[in-house]
Amino acid sequence: MANHPSAEKRHRQSVKRAARNQGVRTRVRSSVKKARTLIESGDKAAAGDAVRLAQKTLDKAVSKGVLHRKNASRRLARLARQAFGLS
Image 1 (tube, rainbow, N blue to C red):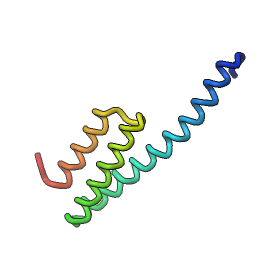
Image 2: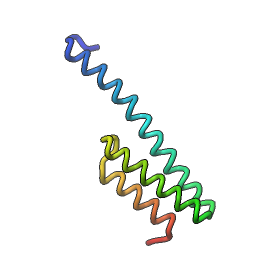
Image 3: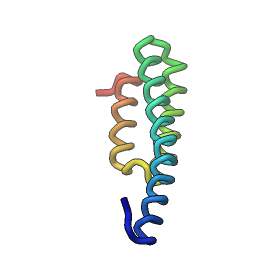
Image 4: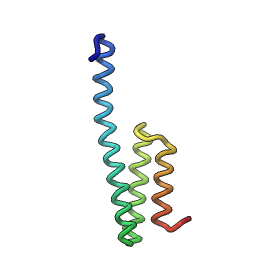
């Protein structure tokens, strides 16, 4: 446990940020998973909408600093390749 006031504050801040980031990461995982299941089901229209929603949530996670820009880009590229049959 922290022994100095500044270290205690840093710990409090890290706990708050971890909780905030966890919610964002959960939303990202849920939207990507939903898109993947719709892609596998074969419903092109719903899959396209889900991929666009996943893109939006990934972009938000990047803007909040939860995900790295290139990590989100890679995830989105893989999703789009699955959804739209690109090689």
